[in-house]
Image (cartoon, rainbow over all chains, first blue to last red; front, side):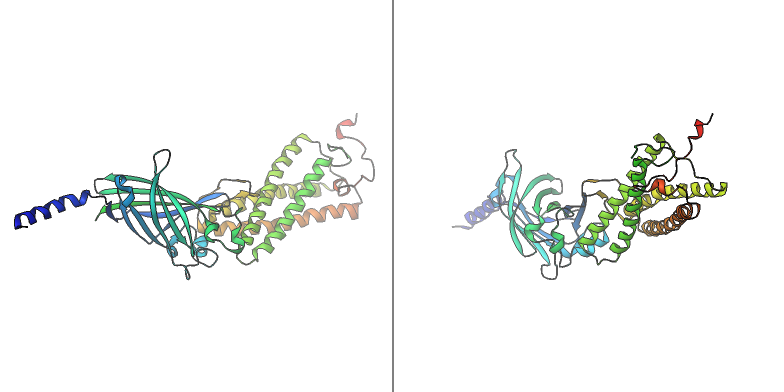
Length: 186
Length: 194
């Protein structure tokens, strides 16, 4: 190959790459939250994690190569109540000394009957790994995109709440998990 | 037993309100001191929830009792010096106020602390005040002191009843006892005399 051809091939490759079957990578910008909502004595409470990391590759057109990989620092859970926030990291709940983080990684994406994108993945929490599906809302904006996800898990599936705290008449089994990420292009 | 009060005795309904509420108030008070000493646990949380539900029951019963009081007749006061009759009624009035104030102070205490309020795990009641830790401490103290005050006023109430029963040997206590019968027939309704 002569120089010109080589240069042209390189150029062609450079142009073609972004359009190849691979989703765009994003980093997580400020104004992003990962949280959960539970029910205590019939009343909803909302919590959020102060520290988490997320590797997001997403393109609605190439779901096959999209991927979420999120790690949450469980010791940073805050729910607006000192008693509860004091109890959550303890052995009765997250047991952060043994299980410092929760990890979610997608295994694939599907669409439900209404056309919503559903992220299928595995959540590892409190030493237990179980499937967790998240409904995905992705809206590109001037600076990048806003990614919102919601899903529901059963805390007892993960052994969160031991002994007396298994009582679901006081602390509901179902916990809503949510994420709202401000994505910036990499 | 008559549904409505007559000059000789209190009605079944009035007696039921009186003794059921006495039992719930004193029982819930004793229960509160016991549960307060429990180690932090979900059981303790559930015991507190039970205490709150019983307190709300007292409040609800009190409203029904007021309603009944408006409908029902009342046996006339037994003979006693005027000041003693006035004192007895004053004691009743203060007891009524405390029966309302104690649950309400507990409810406000709960709200200020930021706890939910669920009635026997069935439904939730709204917060009376916004979450406020300083106010919560004050209301918690008020809640307890009001109960001590109630015990003091109750002592006067019980002393009065016993005084009538033992010294005057009249029907004041007997006509409120669950299966009590009036010793003597009260002559007539005040309005019956020609």
